[in-house]
Length: 116
Figure (cartoon, helix red, strand yellow):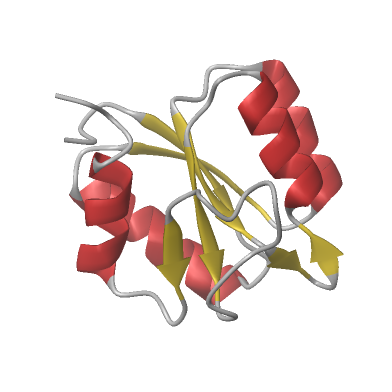
């Protein structure tokens, strides 16, 4: 369950980010952001208070790798969102959410981040 979880949304396309936030709210989570730039995401991660994240791997041409490194360093679980099907090491073993998003897949991937 993701109810009550604070989930950072890192997505550079506003319409997609808005849909993600709506889906999270519909399932009782509290979306943080959305943020569309790596620098903004790094600031939010540094500020703390995040239970998990949905991380777009390509932010207007910038790699999501620095964000993934920051999340990993703080022990924050995350799902990588990409239309490319895979990501480079060392993050290839993280849960991947394919684009275009399917709300049920998003919730399934996020729920999997929190052991029962």
